[in-house]
Image 1 (cartoon, one colour):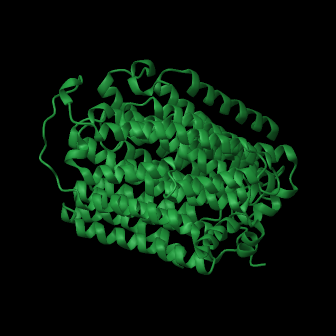
Image 2: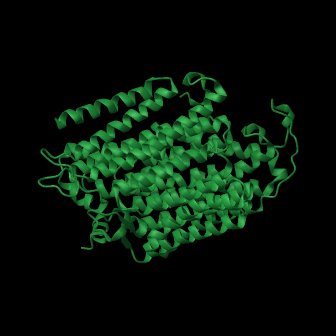
Length: 496
Length: 111
């Protein structure tokens, strides 16, 4: 029951927002805050249920082979927790910035929240596609929300590539249904073992290609930098921090359940895509002058790390990938919120124009320093820990090349994050650049945003130390074991 | 007969993908998306066919075709329609700004 509520409460809020707007003409911040709290606590309740007693909820009471099953286990709980924290932070930032004004934004936000929880909980392949499309349509609209021409272009580009990805996922689903006659993921795990090799190759190619486009990994990443940099600050943070993680979950779930025992080549392909994403993302980020584009390309590289973790096809690799996904959510949301606020203060997004900020905003700059040290992978922080685990598990899986790629990527990322930091710290000499003259703006209060960024930076430090505690390590390795234990998943859904 | 339907679907899918990759006109990109979608739907509908099957409407006798793919198709049509409507809305907005739908003249969509 709690699993259904995690989808129902945000969807209900999404439909109530326009109704309230019709009735009252203005939406109060408190009302949206209450809806947000209700949605997030529903997601957290589902995560709690899934973590302590893995649950299956059969919609309408239909048996798993003909109905839709919602499944909550430790892997989906971990991602539910991640989306709850991330979208809560993004909602708080949006409320501080926009107030209760743009009701369409909040309707889309709740629609997205509901469909993300749907993706994380569903146990049915076609249902996954449907939730994925609800989520994607909301995401296209949120990217284009400011209606500036960059945002519209980015939204259209995202839409075209996202729809191509969705059609490949649908094609894979269609092939799966033709080959087996079922769509429940647990039953498919058993059925796919006995279908011809060629069919399985076609299915895995379609599903992996579609999900890779949606994830934004290197060869098909074109939409990601535009979409993530053209949107407003809160949306950028949400896109980079949370949406990508939901796609990662879908890739992880589908690949582990369907192909772990049947088609090992899928994991090799994911490792190769991941390695290219790391190098490509970092090299492209090095060339950027726009701070938000730099952060977006850095996201491409970080997706690569997570994909390398998934490609290990082992419990340790999956656990490391989830840990890095969580860390990347904290780091990249903090970095995007900081970069967005600082560049709004200065009125430019060019890195060479963002000077003298250490004098005027020392707290923001130190938070940025902590977060970027963490994303580069400096030892006491969490980024180092998760990269270390990914390197360990990829070396354990037999190939050392991805580990070397990660090490090389770290050096490149240090170079470009240091460039941003040195611009922040260098004294203000706005006139020597060919930029519009610096107009001191009325300083706006950003206490909520700063509280979020500060607590994320603090969490980075805490999570960097936590892996030394055995309880924490056991928690994380149990996520990895849940991810790769296909038999337990099948047993949970079918009740055998 | 059913093989012909599969072959048609594959060809239409490839034409759609080719249109998106080669054509520089935004409307043709959207047409390509619509073609790809129709091809996938054709595959799904064909997959429910049983030789000699009757329509699965309540009083029927003998083997009926599988009704489940039809339900999927309806859902997917709704999703595809919303995607394409949104794409066209974006293009109308962009056309108001640029007065063109040529990809090469729209700055950020290159590459």
